[in-house]
Image (cartoon, rainbow, N blue to C red; front, top):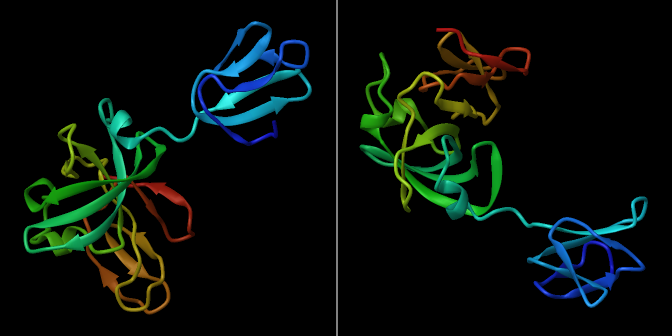
Length: 193
């Protein structure tokens, strides 16, 4: 058995004399076996064998999720389509489809969904339901666009006050900004209300 090899439940990993049972393993008849699907990890210092879980399914994490991070993949007249890749700051395997209706993006000065978000933007929002497609809201001040590129030249946009400015071509764009957004010096900053 090799380190990082994918293992299945009840698969033999080692004998108790070779390695002690670690995370996600059990012993039966002197053999250490996997209790779930994952990658075998042999801790040579502590002489333990562990099974490392693969990334959790987004559908499982969605049940208790308080935040969702995803990429805007399409913008229509009154809604945007988002592919969620992170729930509560944890990466998920694959993506989950979500919808962001314009009614859930409103902020002073934002007149349309195309002013709130654009294709390619990374947004952080709050899931309003636990089924797919997920309905997101970015109304609260902590939610909104957290990463965006210039629609003219593709350079990363930097926050200046309540707008985004391209450091390359000078283009200024409006978005519904989240609390964290890249600022002038390229670091993550907290938006001040």
